[in-house]
Length: 168
Image (cartoon, rainbow, N blue to C red; front, side):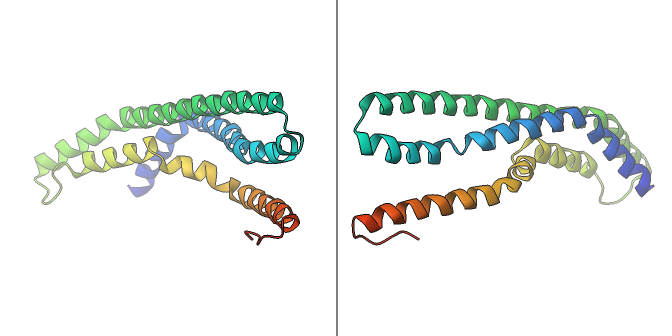
C-alpha cells in the first residue's frame, strides 16, 4: 500500500513537471539578475568615480531600475507558479484524502480524525511556499561566493592605493 501511495504522490507532482521546469528557468534568470547590484557597484567605481561622468551614472541607474523591476516581475511570476502547483496538487489528492478520512471515520480508527487532510494541507503549503524555491536558488551559491571574492579583491586593491585596511 505504501508503494501505491508513493506512486499517487509522484503522479500528482509529475503532472506539474512543466511548471517545475519553467520555475527552474525563471530561477536561472532571477539568479543572473541578482548579480545586477554587484555589477552596478563595480561599474560605478570603475567608470563613474574615475571619470566623474554624470550621464554615465544616470544611464547605470536607469538600467539597474529596469533590471530590478524585471527581476521583481519574474519573482512574482515564479511565486504564482508555485502557488498554482500547490493548488493543482491539492485538487488531485483532495478527494482521495477526504475519502480516506471518511473511511477511517466509518471504521472508527482511533487517533486519525482529520489528520490526512491536515497532512495534505501541510504538503500543499510547503509546495506553494518558499521552500522549493530555495532548492532552485541553492546551486547559485558558489557563483555568489566567487562574486564576493572578486568584489573583496577589488575593494582591497582600491583600499591599498589609499593606504587603508582591506575588508578581506
